[in-house]
Image (cartoon, rainbow, N blue to C red; front, top):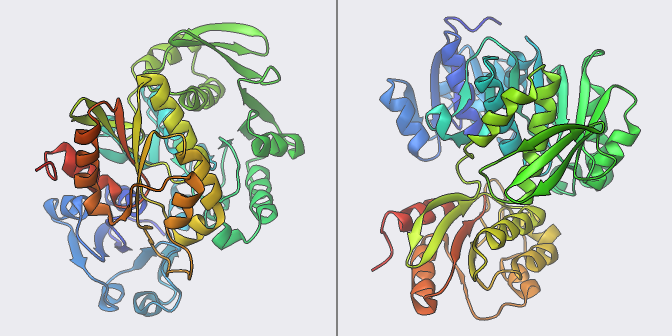
Length: 448
């Protein structure tokens, strides 16, 4: 269906992914409206543009639209979906319209896909390739947006949580890593890994799979894949290989020295993300000489170890980490950057994820010098009996800080920092609304 002149209604238009799709539809000439459960900065942004946004859901929204776009979190019996009938489409299928229409690279994986997608897009922009972009975070270089209309290749972060990453036809599939996650949907790790096999097998006949060989799950995917493939990582077996050097990393392609590269983002995990973007850029035909200055000037995505300011003598960060491996990587990067004591303020995301990974979360968070734990952010889930943040607290071996609601965290962190006086860094971490508490603290709220 051509979009020009069509009325498309977006359920959850205040969400990061749906808001980007609404922007893309606007750019294609569609008439856009939206709704969400509560107002936020994104809904206010659309209202400022004169877009009709209603707070709350109503079947009448669907009656006025040619198409209703929704996320997989909306239940099938929702009155708005029932009212739309066949005039509805999932977020993933709507995105696939754009990706399947031109040469595209889809980026997915358990960790690092937002940063990797943005670094790839940033390189292509700086190299004059004019890419279209869709990512799951706000990039300062996109004017605090997360999509870009371009005439060149399409770079998109894809969502493996509901199998929607299987929908688009891709020229290039980039897998950062694969670890156990999303068991509420897949029910088993075997089913999750099988979905990634289908993703890799779904690239065009002349397409390419790029995957991180340092990660056992992605390395196994590479081994099983029978099509064209390219590996990246620190491993000696990687075709695109990095060696860390003081403040830089040196890159080799099949043994050929491509020289030193610099990345202003902290942590070994971000070098690996940059290496993935570099590998994909080379395959798009970008020369190392163009990649080098692009990476040196790269800025991160909001909420990915984003520096917000200072809290007393400590540097204050907001971070999106919500899986044990991500938590461990972020804390390691902060330790490497600052050296001194770390205070982590963590909000678990989802009851099912807390149930499945409480022990691993505890082990990762135990590496903080001090820990304040929030209640679980439920998102779309109902509570599960016996599952609470206390499972993580016990696994971490921490007994003194209590479990607090997210908006009591700013004051708690400020008080803890004032008592200690010597934290090198304070990080607010999680995929829920904890970022709002961090930004309130950065703005001076909760300090009194």
